[in-house]
Length: 245
Image 1 (tube, helix red, strand yellow):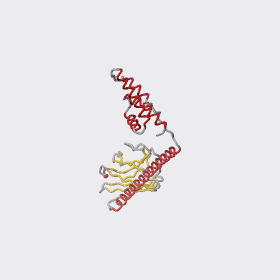
Image 2: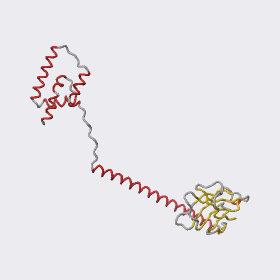
Image 3: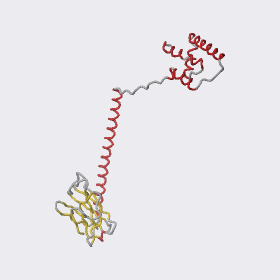
Image 4: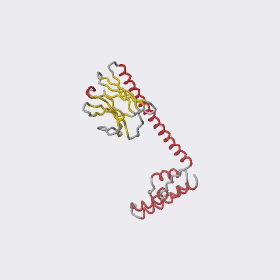
C-alpha cells in the first residue's frame, strides 16, 4: 500500500478507537489492520487511553454536534469538488455527427413526404381521367364544348347517372391563396357550389368530376370562377367560362 493511503488510514485510528468512524472507513481500516502491525500498535495505544478515560469518568454518549464535528474532520467527511465537464475534440465531433445525422433524417423525411404528395396527386389525376373516359363510353353522355378566351375543353353530362365532368385545357396557374371553383347554374340564375380544384403542375389538361347532390336535370349549366383558397359560398371572382346544358 502506498504511503499516502497508509497515512489516511492511520489518521482514522483515533476515531475508530472512539467508535465514531463511519461504516466504509471502518471496513477499510479493519482490513488494513489485519496486515499492518504498526497500525495495530497505534490502535492499542489509543484504546489504552480511551479505557483509562472511561474508568476516570462516567460513561457518556458524545453529543450530536461533537460527533458531527469529529466526522467532519475525517477524510471521508471532506467535500470533494465535482469535476467540471470538459468538452474535448472527441465530444465536439460526436455532437456534430449527431446534428448531421438528425439533419439527414429530417431531409429524408421531407423528401419522402414530397414524393408521397406527388404520388397522391398522380393517383387522383388517374382516377379523374378514368372517370371522364368512363363517361365517354356511355351512349347517354352529352358533350358541350368549352371555348372562351384561351381556354378550351368539354363539359360531359350524363343525366341518367347524374354525373358531370369538366375536361379543360391550358388552365392558368393560380397563386397559393387562389383556387378554381365550379358552380352548377339553376334555371333562376342561382349558383350551387360544385367543388374547388387546382390544375396539376406540368400537365396541360385538367379533369374535374362533379358529383351533384341534386338531380343535374334541375340545372341549366355549369361555370368556373377564380375564388380565394378554400372556396366561396357564392361566386366572387373572375369567371373563367360558363356552359349551358
